[in-house]
Length: 381
Ligand SMILES: Cc1cc2nc3c(=O)[nH]c(=O)nc-3n(C[C@H](O)[C@H](O)[C@H](O)COP(=O)(O)O)c2cc1C
Image (cartoon, protein in one colour):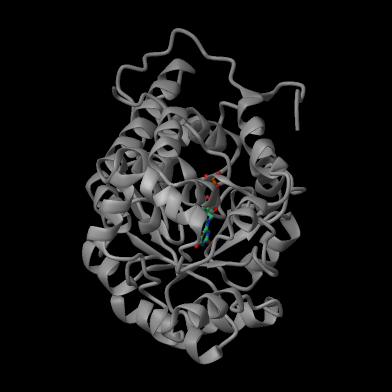
């Protein structure tokens, strides 16, 4: 049966994936209140439709970073995506090219940055995690430049490691350890296990060359790579070093966004990492109007965290964002449907966004910024 919405992608993903992999995708920090708050805040925003407007022709295309995209959303960086769907990075990048939207490869991605640059030369963005080693970071940035990436997103919302209780309980680590529980999950999810076996063990394909090769040391290396001392001074140096567009991902305060703009960053992603870093952050969609009024109408603001439908995308734009990134919504689709899920997720978002636009009486992305969604009284948090 066809999956008709993101909740159905998620249900399929839950059935298909071993528990440790589903929990890695679905889970978040602490009690996971941050995830619930992100999602609920989108639900609590509603539109009062304008009636009797000719909406026969609707156009979702929009301009960002000097070019036109077919739709106002792109794919957020997701580490270890081939664990969720073998061949996932390549399939999603290919589907993004076909749909003419951007795809962001994570530093912790399971396909190399060079390979994604071949698949998506005009549509690939690269997300940078600044690790402890200056040499490694310098080398990755040089490789991204050589490979031709136009947009570098530097993620700044993991100053310290998260406590994700599901991962801790599952003893989740990469490369994963075959404990009795993991062995049971592998046996009870034979189709995932066989596909993963055939595709080869998921690897940190961009950064594995900097890490020790044996299993234990690679796991220890990965968990020791968070650079807690990363600060504005270091970001300023990256700004000097990177000659193309630099976007800061993971800001939640107007002051920080203004600071990034002063440093010459080309835009920001208002993001709380999908509630994966802490449970007590505000919902990102709630921050958009305030940050938009602080930076004025022209500074590029992207938003992610909690987007589960095309209607949510339109809400984010009407609240003041220029562009939206989807994280779990895409990964539930490829985890649940396999690689065809990449196109299915994009098609679904486009279909829902276009219907929403028509339903509320708008025909394009520039004008929907006037739609002003209304916030219902908060029911849960
Ligand atoms: C499984 C998973 C892995 C992620 N890995 C990364 C990553 O490597 N780099 C990064 O900047 N963000 C990462 N994120 C955060 C996403 O880029 C994005 O901010 C988040 O998923 C948005 O929230 P949503 O999943 O509710 O849409 C990850 C998210 C998930 C769900």
